[in-house]
Length: 418
Image 1: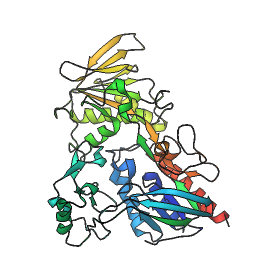
Image 2: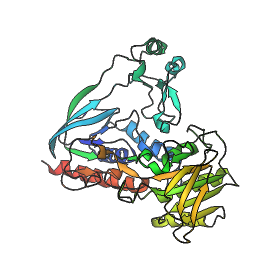
Image 3: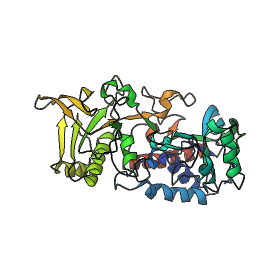
Image 4: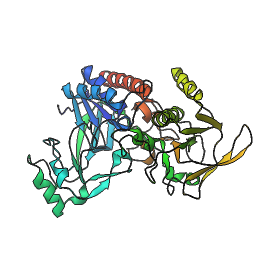
């Protein structure tokens, strides 16, 4: 890979599906690209999914093709564990300060795993949203790109850290790495900063923080994934038992002025997908979907109708008011059916909260941007170019389309700036 610097270079901030798409599209059009990602690997939220619409593909399907395009390109430079600290200038002449965190593993890592064999400390696994642990020397996940280990900073300067370093036969472990920064000159910036799940801990009435059998939709994706904490078996976190009754609660925090005042677009269909996951694994399971409205865009309405024909999937028009702890510790969903006016308090083996999409820039991790709306999404106007969910809630296919458009805007920006 090259290390481009200049007014015709395009910087893409965010290495999820949108950022990857924008980067490869711009590079294959003949422009140098710098791709910045804050985590150890590319792929973003898509890499953490079990399957995604519209074809219910596994993430390998779309990501591996794009990883190959990056590997083959001589125009793309990738910086992981990096964030943008400062932006100065304007289109055609930006100076960007990039801050990098220590990975403690150099690029010559062969991903052999010898370092993990001697590691003893266990740390929360961010890829599985902390639902399990990994060794302090770990490969982020099975299809990580770059395919390189990470050493947790907690073992730096300890005997365990020295043992991890000694185990590496190619000398790739560097425990002396420190945070660093460098400047780049670029002509255009595409903000593909993606999204983060709305914190379920904020939804105190739904008891996610203290009832283990209440999980979120992103956690459900990991439970259903073969590389997830349960190797793809959907079970109750409290005891590993198979759930016979499952509640899916829509709009958990979305369309709520106390939390997210907008529809996150993907939640309804994600819950339909989760209902299908449960029914695929458990022929006798009962799934109840609590909803305000069911929103399925484009051709995906047929997926909803398929589930409505399943006699073991029930749709209850209601926004549950709270979740209580039952006698056996299982969650009890409480509320009122808005069609029948029935007051219910129904116990379940497992409850899945369909939490919404919150823009990553909402928490002030990025430099000041002029075109940010009241929710933290980036306007695609003026000099700000946004791709994917950085601009607003989108599904994967829409994010890819948005990223291609963003690449075109960036190309136009750098070619007309001079």
